[in-house]
Image (cartoon, rainbow, N blue to C red; front, side):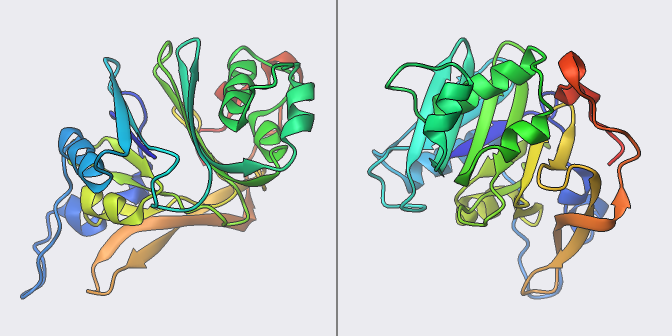
Length: 265
């Protein structure tokens, strides 16, 4: 799966930008620095990599989604789903072991409900000020999964990766500063140059709330500098800072949506 979102839709963490690229430092002698690509070129490369097995959708709000068909051999053997409902689109990779329980919890009685539709319903519940904090909702998902949700009505992105590390997911910054989220490492790497990194496990990302751990919602995330095989600084990885806390109490009740996140983390 591939999601590309203009900076007006979602701002990538500053640490995801390669320090050397941002500073305009020339590549070392004898090395060639990969340059980030524009969204249209990234989409073309994705379709070329999965020729005849992929499809995509672009939105006027500054977003594009691309998916690989269920029989494509790459990037993994995991289940891949794409669903939409009420202008909310979800790309989902993996599976939820407690899907049946979650279907009952959200009052979904259709036998055709799958993981992607369940995530859409959970997102809509959060968006419309449901009774649970966003981190608790995602933490209730049991299994190996990665998903990207795009709400075309509100131009909002919501993405998450399970804490078990069973699903690969990467993200980076395109040439126009769009954020790129993809489960194919090579496509992300070629699309974003040095400004890419693994998406942190046990974390979720939202257009308004930024990046946050749903496994440890009261802890801040810290950026860990990355150096590639050529000794070039790349986009940072993120991990939970066990010593740093977010200076806010988790909200409860109808105000417990992601707009209450502490944006200073």
